[in-house]
Length: 191
Image (cartoon, rainbow, N blue to C red; front, side, top):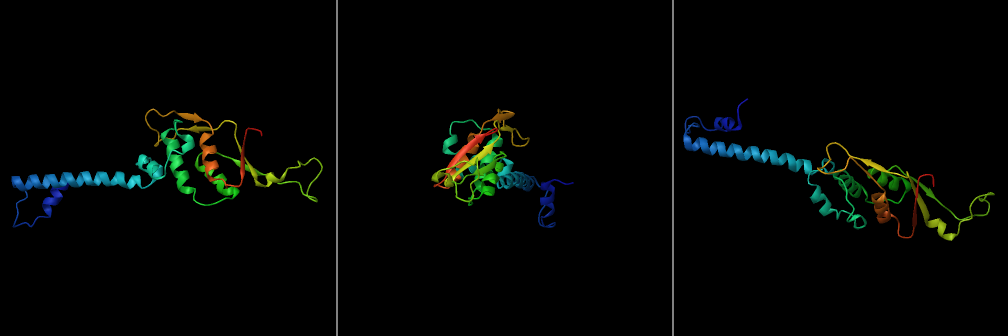
């Protein structure tokens, strides 16, 4: 396979230019180097279009105003930062259980949601809780007592831990997305 400079020399008109002449050859080598560098740069620009590659992570965080205000000062690995970007991009619209479960999943959490209702005549059975009026607006996120986020190959940065523990990212994101009139509770473990 010929080099890019050799390919550029083949584009010269054969009678008018001598591609081996010193000045022209130096110009062709310079152009080939510039084109090679541009090609390499275009690959990284293309990768930065997709946030899950981790390329251009600082720009994604700047555009999306990350880290979230409730997570400022809490160290996050590169993988957790990438998950936060993807989660924020996917978080446009929705107030259903499946929407919030999908948001938690995009952050790496497996949750369920419990909704409550006040007692109603004809629906209440012996032993059922008698919830007051605010329980109509209350919902509980049920998550494991210990959520471990393992490191992922390909998005692991230097100095990142191999795993991290905690639910602060889950609580922060869901509190930002919850309907304003609702009351959000978190239950961990067997709650």
